[in-house]
Amino acid sequence: MKLRLKRGIGENASCSRQRIARSALRAKPGALFSQASRSTSARSDIMPGWQCAPFLKLESVSVRSPHRLLDKIVLITGASRGIGRAVAIRFAEEGANVAVNHYRDGAAAAETLAELAAVSRREGHGARQHCAIEADIGDGAAVADLFADLFARLPRLDILINNAGIQAPTPGEAFEEAQFNRILAVNLTGAALCARHAIAQFLAQGGGGVIINTTSVHEIVPKPGYLAYSIAKGGLGNLTRTLALEFAAHGIRVNAVGPGAVATDMNAAWIHDAAARAAVERHIPLGRAATVEDLAPVFAFLASEDACYITGQTLFACGGLTLFADFKSNWAS
Image 1: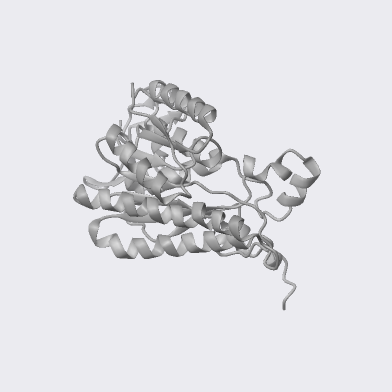
Image 2 (image 1 turned 90 degrees about the vertical axis):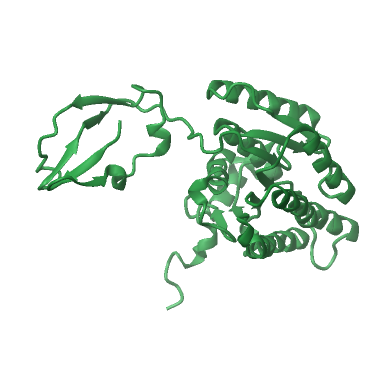
């Protein structure tokens, strides 16, 4: 049932101006709304001279994910746990077929696959072509094998999520070269290599396609003591913009999501320590660390046609960490 506002003789304006979420409108019939009245009489108390037909009353909320990614084929690197796993689950909810990349994490990948299958059934998508593929994103030959394996299993690729990442201290005066190179290999070079294979496939398919890179607030905010990580995330930002510009004419969109402090295994040093967590969260304008479920919808939006006119952008989903929180109070003037 569609809401429309009527003004004068037959002039219509959609009530979508009042923005009812797609996920709500796609709930099972009767789960969200009930028809309170079939009357189309004027509602001057709402808007003089306008009529609303029919009038719906909110009864209860049963929010479901929209199905914007139905039948899309998605590769997510580093998807056996953390942000990647949450993104995989969200994409499965929206109807996608998800290839879960992992490295030496087979048990977690199997758990993720089981969850994806359950989510697909629950959302009415039936059996999807979910799969797990092990590959070290920091190894160029392994990345090539990953894509060969992917295309042996699935007929095409629609979306690449470059999510694999590692972090370790690399202080500027004393980093170990091997560790420095490994972080860059996984976090930056590996993402570029995955993008290269994905774009070649997108072009062979006739154009179109989406790449989303997982960057960080440290794409633009320095992270002292973590030089390699900062360089990699800054490089991912420019990788995003450069590829977006280079391949825009082919209908290929490239964007990034920049999380802030997220409760994942990578941040185990503080997420289970109440005092340490409070110290972290004092720096976040919204007052709390993110959950992975906070971030997954951002990836789904950028992958969907709702973001069809967005490319070359980093969407910082960081609770306000990029807002220069030290300036919350005016100390400079």
